[in-house]
Image (tube, rainbow, N blue to C red; front, top):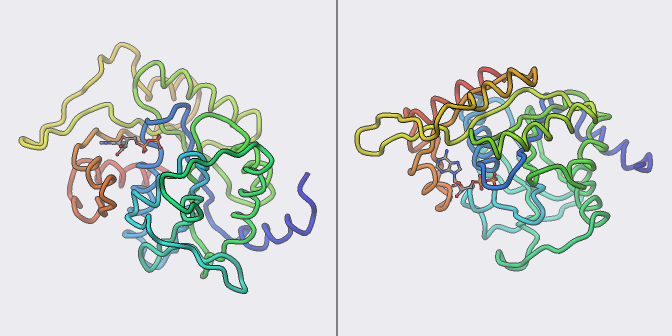
Length: 269
Ligand code: ADP
């Protein structure tokens, strides 16, 4: 149980955040961090008056500094806490990646140290103006990090999750476990996002399905599990490139099927 003073600080800092969204996935490599960054970029560009904070607690594999193109930035400590790195005027990010000496350093921490780090992120990051959205990128699966986040954030309002999956059965199987976890800990699920079910040809721009539809994909699974299906994001080679190079895909490819798909997902949230 968190000692009261820390919980009070946490409530103070985060209770006024209008939406706190954990981005979950059953497996690694399904596009959870990519989706987190796209969601944040779309929210920030469509709502200039709103402030978006992104917290990367994928402690063993923090990739958001790279995806946002800020991997050489350091965070600063001030009297009011840690200052996150600002990507845009209304979009800031905090990641364990900023605390590592070198981006190739491995983080090998046991559960209690991870929990302490998460508590510190939640209580000591000074997001500046009140956040409208706090989007939290988590490690794959359900581990110490998820339990800590739920334990700490449950006492604040407007706390929910989005689950990202690919359409293959191996990934869907793990999503069912993720949804079961959410149910057991009382975490509301906004819905499921399917990534990389289709492919946008860079030449002719035609979208084709990649996997056979024998399982019905994520939409069918969401239906069976009684959670909303939020939409499908195509596999788009230019998205992969932009993420590797830290380029703002949402701005560069504003009218692309991928950006339109994210916008539809935001409308469904
Ligand atoms: P996770 O956070 O689930 O481990 P990532 O977001 O890091 O997965 O994505 C894994 C890889 O797949 C990255 O190289 C990323 O650029 C790429 N990727 C993810 N989604 C897409 C997509 N829709 N189109 C193209 N590449 C993608």
